[in-house]
Length: 165
Image 1: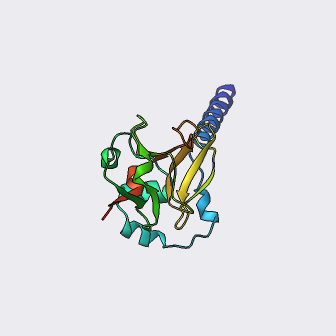
Image 2: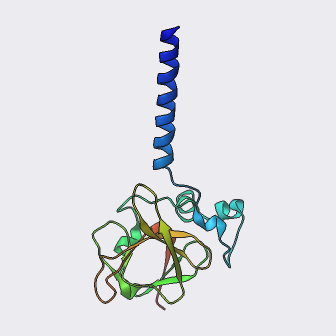
Image 3: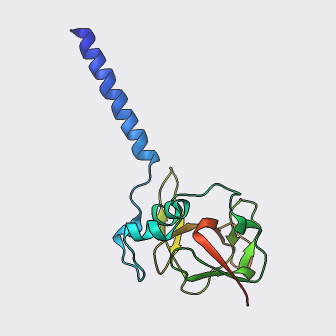
């Protein structure tokens, strides 16, 4: 009888600790779900419009693997647009090599982005999303170059480059 109680208690504690760990490590549903954006599609329409990786980043706030984006090496004049709704976001003249493995910019175009607090993964960061569709772009950090001192660290898959004409 005593052995069964110990086994039951140990199992309950293990399940509780496992559940607590999963809750701490997993991100909650994206905050954008509570907001209304100018450009909206159903989940099925987003899945049809975006690649699986772009859907995971833009709609589920995933992060692409560092160094995996061809946009890291893009140096031509032009504008980086939202891959979800095509809103112009960043002028190529504000792009710089941050050494992080993600396209980085020190400024954004006027009224192009929105931000919110992101408390995932045991830290607090500032999440950056497209103002028009709410698509997750990346995060902004206060360690960028002058003149802003900011580093907009963006997922390349969330962007589309449009070269200057």
